Length: 285
Image (cartoon, rainbow, N blue to C red):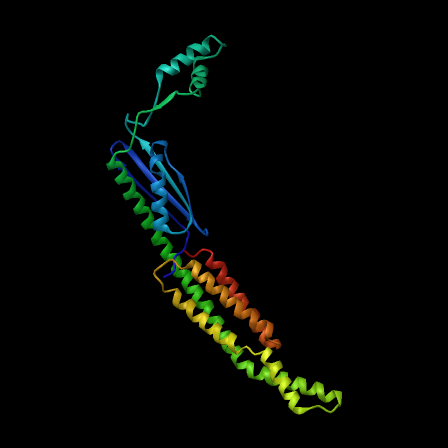
């Protein structure tokens, strides 16, 4: 089963006097690249969030954003009124300004805000991770839907490459006959005596250099393996990428040994389909 690496999910929940909103955006990446934007009082959970996201989402550029809106008087950060008033009195003696200007300047100075929360309650932690798992489930569903579309596209292109390979198998015997005829004609034009036994030996050696039997067998096996790997329940993006590289290697070797115009055209078409597969594989988990 193929999963896409991209996805988006968002959930909200009410917990006591606050509204918690959690949002995840996922894009393609070679590794699990997790970025967090969370309120200061939740920072103690950053490491746990990263591990949880990496274990469940495996790979991708993952952005987690948590918003907390307080509806009551229990905000984690409060204004230190004593320090603010002290700053305002000092500013009055330094320069003329309106009360609102002095207040705005005082609020920018150190220690005007204090945190009264030492740690999160277990109940709030549980609420956060339940919400996190709900969003991950939502993204996983999205990834499956997009993965199904990718799988159909891969299957279509792999089958096209298989059809091109069948065309090559039909052309290959004719190609060998043309090579033999070409060499014989070239020798006939020289009008010299030749050792026919030696000629046959050299011809066999020459044809072996351009033989693509092994490449055809290996390419058939790689294409079958690619289709089989797509049914895996594990993340297989990297594995499919490696198989695609092997497919490309065999196609390139066939092209280099082709020595036949029609076969070369087929190789170009196979490469075109494979490049489209490789582009899409960048987004497979």
